[in-house]
Length: 487
Image (cartoon, rainbow, N blue to C red; front, side, top):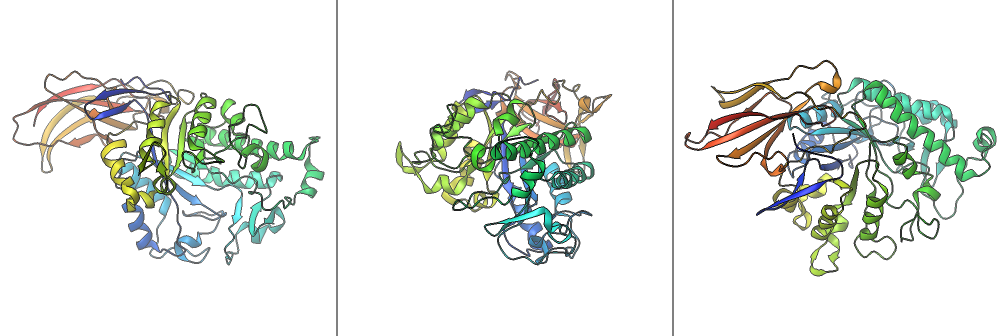
């Protein structure tokens, strides 16, 4: 069994550095074109999830109190059909399909929702069952954006009903919320929540503290709802990249930008330290050397303050390739940023914004992912706070010829409860005489939900040792079951 934690280590060989154990290789996928249609959307998504070495997809299924999945609570998204509330034709459930496609490739699927945003700034004809039609009094307009008022319990309950629906009906591996809590400030305009504060302040004298209380309560309850329904589903948050500036707090970062705590009323460190969330993905969408929000200072700040939960870095591909490396002006910043990731022990992965840009290979970013940084397959980071017991190793490992070729096969180990069940399998390959080392991710040839693997037979003259381990739903890895074969 590979020794893993979300505080990673590395091993080195002639190909470079490889992560010991778990590292999150995530892409964010979001619909950006209204009315893509079933065929176009499916083709685009298929292309995005098929390459580049990702082991997880974060797919936006709810952007403005709508649904890129079949829902009895909220209307179909206009991004799929062009008209909010109109079902796709031919019929297609994007989330169910994406889950199937991810699992077919051995990847995790995380459903991404925007909790409070009810309508974006672009004009939209609302469906009759949209929350702004059924309960317009529960939202406010701010800078052209419509937001469900976080100060209302009925809004919190409504959002949680959507969360419960997704978690209970879909075989997701994680659920994910982004950086939209209270709206981003615009020109000093006040947030219109005087009435709610007067009615529901709970004796909290400071308006900012009251707003943070509202968001804190939602985040805490969301985590509780998710884990009550399915204790293995991972709850993640992708907040704005600055918690607080040093001028606002002694623990703040050496930055001068917008602040989660003070302007968005998101106390991210409280959620981490209290264990309300399972992973955090701060959006560090700036470059190294930015005068107000230096990427290098921020990644080191988050690594210092995020020891209680896995930390994945939200990375803007476009920003990275558009800025030169201060230490090497002839190249962009991809290498420098990934070097920082590998140096910082508390950084357990990367989430790239966004998949389409990598597929377009701007600045050869996608090529470098495939050939260098995500060349080796990676297991998910360890989450002992969800479950720390590994499943038993796979049983009855063997090989046999079939009409599809030489197959390695095995049986699922016995299990008494969800934490013991094998969810996926990891297949390692070692050459004759090579020491079996399951801590070396470069030896992983496949991660699969299947109980078989097609072997690359080539004449039967070379001897190899295959080792198959089991992963449970959280990512705990079993001991290995071995099989020698000639290929």
